Amino acid sequence: MANIPPDPLGVGGIARFADDFRTRRVTSEAVTTAYLARIEALDKRLGAYEFVAGDRALSQARALDALLAAGTDLGPLMGVPVAIKDLIAVEGMPITAGSNAVVEDLVGPEGTFVGMLKRAGCVILGKVKTAEFARSGHGVNQARGTPRNPWDAATHRIPGGSSSGSGVAMAAGLCGFAIGSDTGGSVRQPACFNGTFGLKTTKGLWPTDGVFALSPTLDTLGPLTRSAADAAIICAALADEPTPAPHPARGLLLGKPERHFYADLDAETEYCTAGALAALEDAGVTIVTVSIPEVAEQLHFYPGFITPEFLGYYGRDRYEATRENLDPFTRERTERGIDTPADEYIRLLWRHRELCEIARERLRGLDGWITPTTAFTAPPVSYFLESADAERAHARIAQNAHTANLFGLCATTTPIHAFGSDMPVGLQVMCAGGEDRRALSIALTLENVFGPPPTPDLSAFA
Image (tube, rainbow, N blue to C red; front, top):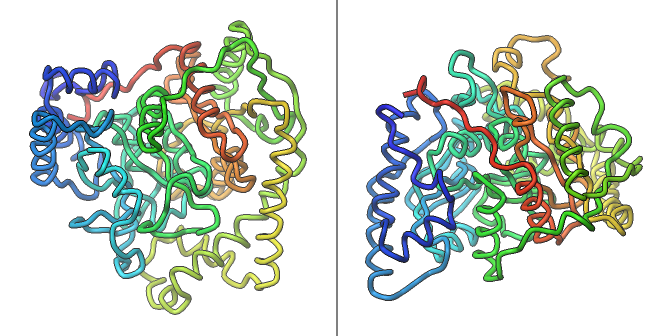
């Protein structure tokens, strides 16, 4: 592509890089330089990054090259450049949480998870944008800017949120992989809208100290990657475990919920989902209809639960002092739950714990539940700024994603737009809490059945 260096991990992903790195066919410095050049060429228009640590990243990369040359191998992620959501503290880098309000004192110093990445030998390219305080599923941020979805250079379409910059950076090949957070779909929605793979981890799998808290009860971290194979390598490396293998297609039993998840889909999502499910069945996967009536409860759960947890962290006095300078969408979502009585919040917390147990029972005998990730492909940003129907549309973004958080599950999204859409479409699989390796094994199977997805034409962004 003219004036744009090739994505150095675009062919073969992390596994190919790891092999080339160890056989000295490529260096971390060369790969980091290529990503910084791609950021320079593309991100002026895409706007995925909040902060680029170019000199520091190159220094890290050179040090890792020297370490490997001296005989120290930190594992499969050594030398891989990564982008970090600007909700997460990284020593020596600013943190905004997508806001013009000051939040450094709330977040505190760099936490355990970033330390895990550094010990694994990752090169941190910088911080990528987020919806303000992670409070939106569309990723529109009127406070600090909204990244452009790389699938449409003519129309500014939503990137998905809240990990908006993570999704755009990954889809545009501006990093080896990206880290996002997921409280109600914030890894899966941008992964879906931008055509990448995403993993919502089980709560507690990855620590969240040093991360701006939207909901300490529900917040999780997760990777956005070019493939399930890359995500499997990342998770295994950070846990010091073997990389999971694909689940055999024959013998895989997935539940298809009979209501809610398949309601009100746009034509492209419905068509691609049907094609993907048919391909899985042709490959030997068994898909059965299941009932999950408790899903209806999530419609009333989030306003009364998330806002009290957010205010408990952010502080009511700080909110009142800063509210006029916050993104209008942040204000609107916060105001809807600001007067939640304490007893109502406690009842919702107890119900969340009950639903985690109910979900485990309803998944007994199944490998997971399979649904579309979102109900529609990415609409224009202007729709959420101008339409009287914007709030309903925002609710539809999260209608399928909230379940995994509320029910304590892990979940993946896999691109399926190759089945007949010009814009990305995602297929979600939810597994029981703690079954992250199983979720990745299933995702590897889906990836083997579907093949690699199309990628966006970035030439118009250069």
